[in-house]
Image (cartoon, rainbow, N blue to C red; front, top):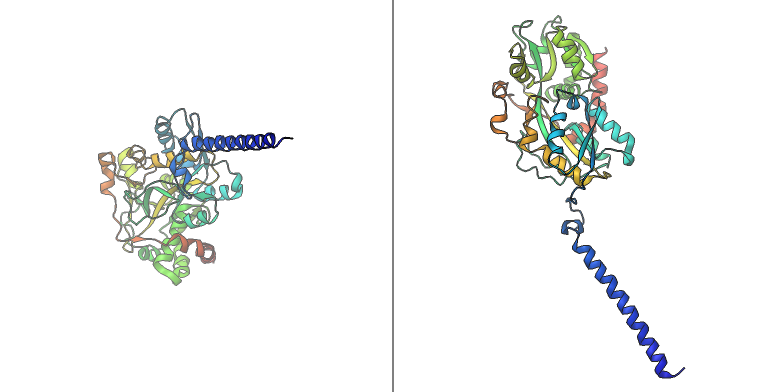
Length: 365
């Protein structure tokens, strides 16, 4: 073959190769021009825009999804903000039940969002490795404590308290110690810390006040316990409101519902001089969610005034955002704790099992 022909073939191949490389590079540029800058930054919490017709699966507790709960209101309001999206709630029996369900399902969980865990379960939930950063700015929220979690989005809060029937108990105990020292014929209804968020809250409340002497406090208190229920609804609605006992473990905010909706001041929360244990309820996004953009949008919506205004008389808790005059005036008449009591999520994670064993042994002697 003549030398000229060889050179022509060589340079022809070079030109073809160059053309292919340039075409590939051009395609890459065009592709990345359509990708948000945040998506190219490692560790960015931003998500692409939700697709029309997306469906979001939210694991939560049963009272949130009930006809009188906040769930139906928030679902309707959120779906009105997006293009043909839907929210599907999966109702479980408790906050602990939510965590147990996603742990059992692992990476195959159908949940996009979990809603209804609290500060006492946060470290346990984070340790599963199933959750991811929310990408939601929580810096402007109104909470009794500082908030720095990038994973969990708080949506309401309250204080555990003993609610009493003023027609059955004229003079309630004014402290946890006074309740423990009260005559044994004063009966109370409480919940199990293994299955109930308030039950766990009471166990931590007693531990925070009494420390190493908590077993002795529980041994005396157990003589006043009429029954220990699996969950809050059974204790409050089925037993307490039917007059089975004059006091029940609930929340300092519970009387607001009775005053605003039932138009009665019969049920009040006893103020304890030692202070009251704080509960902050949270929501989080699952790492393997197929609808992360919609999940992030839902979490952002959860702390808007529109969503927050649904909570005071459905969840009967304090909102975490300023909702102005949409906060029922009855909330201004609730007890103000002498102090806020709380263990860190890590302390609860590291000691929960041992403290439950301690409670169980002390209350079954």
